[in-house]
Image (cartoon, rainbow, N blue to C red; front, side, top):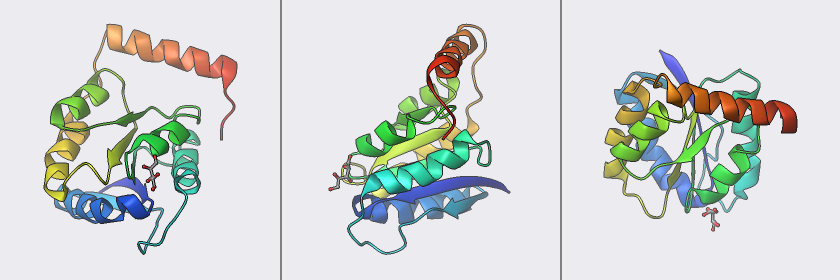
Length: 152
Ligand code: RB5
């Protein structure tokens, strides 16, 4: 089993349940960073906790869910080595894996329905990182990070 970190705020709580079920069906173990009850929560705290583990190399992949997916992705992308992509459908998840080597996916809990998540996760988890120009571009991102970012 491979581990995938997952975290949400109150606006992502319902969709997180659907993601947890889909991950289990796909054979992935979920490491849950909360929240565990749908109580109003500030998303930066959850994104920070998960993205830090990815940045430190303790977690290979993560998923974050808030109302729009935007706040979570803004926070996660502050961390060196984190490539967080907000995705809306299998095509954007496929491209996030192939082109951007995205190691964190962000979802909108308010604008996606639970039934939409399984094909999106499948596309992300099963698509290999592309070669050639995609690797060159990700290496350019890494060079920027080396100059500008410290590890979280
Ligand atoms: C919470 O109301 C909402 O602002 C949050 O879940 C998220 O959408 C922020 O980007």
